[in-house]
Length: 427
Image (tube, rainbow, N blue to C red):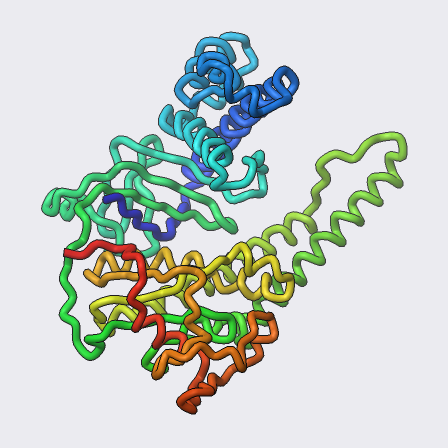
C-alpha cells in the first residue's frame, strides 16, 4: 500500500528557498500550459461536433484527436514547443521529474472531470497553494531530509519520517516526495510503498463494537454516550475566524484603494495586476489565519479519532452521508464546511486499517435517527422528514416510552445495524 508522511520543513538557506520557488513556478506554468492546450482541443471538438452523442459514435481514432495524454503532450512539448523558441531557459533548471509530474497532474484533473468525479479544471494562480515533486535519490535521517538538487533540509518534527535505516529493515521504499508552500511555510510529504498494516487489535471494553453518529451540534456521538464537541462552536474558533474575515476585508479595501489611485493618476491606461506593501501584508496575514483554521479542524478530527481507536472495538459503524445534498441548504452549508466530515471518514478509514478494526458503513437512507433502538418502532410522531426535525433533540418512543438523546439513539442503531458495507479488510 501507499502511505504518506507529512511534516513541516525549515528552509533557512536563501538559495534553497529560491530554487524551491522556481520549481513550484515551473510546475504551475506547465500545468496551465497543458490545460490551455486541452481546453483548445475541447473547443475545437464542440465547434466541429456540437452533438456530443453523435461524437461518441465516431471511431476511436477520431475521438482521440481531441484529447492529448500526458505522455503525448510531453513529446510535443520537447520536440515542438522547446524548438520553437517560446520556451524560457529558466524552466530547464527544475528537475525533469517535476516537469513530468505537472503534465500527469493536469491529465488526472481532466480524467476526473470527464468521469464526473470533479469539477472542470482551473488554471493555477500565483497566490494559490504551490507544490513541486521530487523523486530519485531521497535520503532521510532523524532530523533532516536530502532532496535532489536541493540538498539537506531540516525537519520540524524529529523521528516522524521513516529514516533510511528503518526503510531498509522493514522493506519500505520511497516512491516520491512533495514539497508544498502554504501560508509562507514549507511542508514535505514523503510517499512510501509498504505492506498493509495487519496489526490485530485486542478488543477490550467494547465487545459489541461502536456506532458513530456524525452531526452539526456535536461532531461525533458514540453509542456509549460520549460526545465530541464541534470545535467551530468554541470561542477560540470564532476568534480565529473573525481575524480571517477582518484581513479579508482589509485586503478588499486595499485593492479598491489601489485601483482608484491608479485610475486617478493614469486615466487612459488599464490597470493590470496591482500590488503594494499593504496588499502583500493583507495577503500574508489572510493566508496565516486561513491556515490556522484548517489546522484546527484537522487536529480536532485526529484527536477525536485517536480516542475512538484507543477503545479497541471489534468494529465501527458509520452512516453514509449525502454531504452534497446537505450543503444545498444554505443554513447548513457553512457549518458542514467547517466540520470537514469527508476528512473525518478518510482518517477514520486509515486508522481502522492500521489497528485491525473493521469499519462498516450503512446506507444513506437508513433511518438511524427515527428508529427506537429498544423496540424498533419507527417514530412518525416526532419526525416527519422535514428540516424542522433538526430541532428535535430528545427521542421519545410512542410505543415503549423510551426517552433518550436523539444522537445517542442514532449511534446505538448504527451499532446494531445488520445491513452494511465493509470499508476495511482485516486479517
